[in-house]
Length: 359
Image 1 (spheres, rainbow, N blue to C red):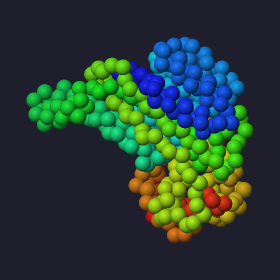
Image 2 (cartoon, one colour):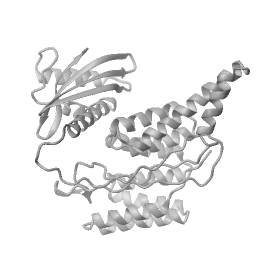
Image 3 (tube, rainbow, N blue to C red):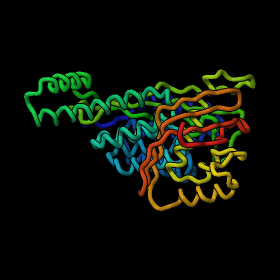
Image 4 (cartoon, rainbow, N blue to C red):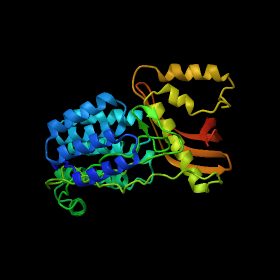
């Protein structure tokens, strides 16, 4: 199975960019660069010790925590790395990179269903994230290969399955090496970077280019390849003029992604925050009564999984209509239904004004 290796040259370049962007905190950038040098030298134990010291002073720093997940992966401490990346997805569900790296680890463990789910979450978070789309294609190829193998075990003379299996193996290139997403962009691209836990002015958003890794060796296709994402440039401040419709659709899609993610992780505050103050409750009850009922339901024991597909968004000025197929799963219930959300722009954010089941 291909082992993930760090492309330290690109890591150091990204950290150098971070140092320039965060001129107010050179010590932090230097610390990350020093950790990168230790990784380059293969001194993973020392690198882990340094990143732990770094995080002791900045426990919420997403860049440092993501780097720790990389180091743990390098040390073959998969379960610990999974814990780090999973926590990042819970706290920063808008970031696709932690989901991508979870998928890499799951795929190496041949947990292809989990890898598929992680990549689907990455795509819901950022529909234009090409890395996740290609990775998902590799997962589908691996699942198809397993299915064709099973078909041939049952009927070895199945020429159609033989041809398809050969095609899949040819597409997989005999087992190409794995690469995982490396240091991520700023934890909240639409908000200011935080230095020493103190927020910067909201007019200075910063993003750090993600860094990809290359694999040290190539083995048979036990895990799908992963590819590096293109660097993300920092977004310039948005002009006050009206945005193109495509931008509004992307903003509405992002709002729905965050709503579903908050619901799935049972984050009541973020979930209820997705609804506008003038939200029209489905049963006509007061907003406080509706909030209380939703809180009671979501806080029931057991996990919740909320996802959607076939999203269609139409925007008309400061209002939008989103139609999609919603999938809900909890300990006691599993349903799929059509959902319609009417959203409005409130204080610069798209929030839910109405929701109903059915078209």
